[in-house]
Image (tube, rainbow, N blue to C red; front, side):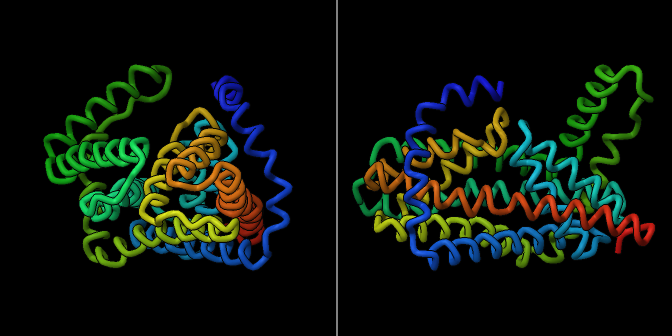
Amino acid sequence: MTAVSLYLVAPSLIELFSSAPRVAKLEPVWLVSMAALEAASLATVWLLQRICVEHVTWGAVIRSQLAGNAVAKVAPGGGAAGGALQYRMLVEAGTPSAAAASGLTAANLLTFATLLALPVLTVPGFLAGLPVDKGLVRAALLGAGVFVALAGVGGILLFSDRALLAVGRFAQGARNLVLRRRPRLEGFPSRLVLERSRALRLIGAHAREALIASVLRWLLDYCALLLALAAVGAEPRPSLVLIAYTGAQLLALIPVTPGGLGFVEAGLAGLLTLAGVNAADAALATLAYRLVSYWLPLPAGGVAILLQREAIDDRGGVQ
């Protein structure tokens, strides 16, 4: 599926990457500033996960998040693979398995919900009657529709034990049916309710910090894209760039390529064109942005895995 998907977007990618030599000609201060914003964005993720995951140290959060983030960007279906690696590293670091699972789930859901809510910031521009391309309007409406649907389902699962128990029974039955040779899973529905309550309690005690961290995670990344556009001399309306940015982040969730590779580059460049950026500048800004947001964190993930291994080997555990 990954090979087929990359084949389908190959023409757009080839055209896009033809602008790669121009990235090296950008002023270094722009790239350094973008990298600093991306580093700050990662720090807000660490803060959010530190809030949501009980009994975890800063070192364990940082190492596991960097490693999981890197795996998510290099493996097909990377979101699941990256989440599994982060969970494993947290458990190795001494975090209780249930707390790691529920905390990471809560942090990821809050982050995703915040992303889908970002287009709400563009509503004043629509109401003011400012000209907006129909393609961007459709993207904004799609994001709003997904947000409303997920908010409704999420609200039910957050506050209805009966609904969550039903989901747990379905998941437990499906797991036992598929993995017949493994020991049967029992008690999952009640454990799901318990961990949901634990996550709500943790976030509720630090609701303001968690919300601020989840919003800043995306806004800092979005500002990196604005700097990329400024670096190439483009000056589109920030509200339109925000719609394009949200659409590109949703494309990154497509699991058939690592980190949405190919889909994000082609999609973001196209959406920026709809936002009023000429095609050449949109391609160059997209490449510069993806350089610092996608490729730059990958080596840090490898270093984080090595540090975890060394900590386990040298100390017989992880501090």
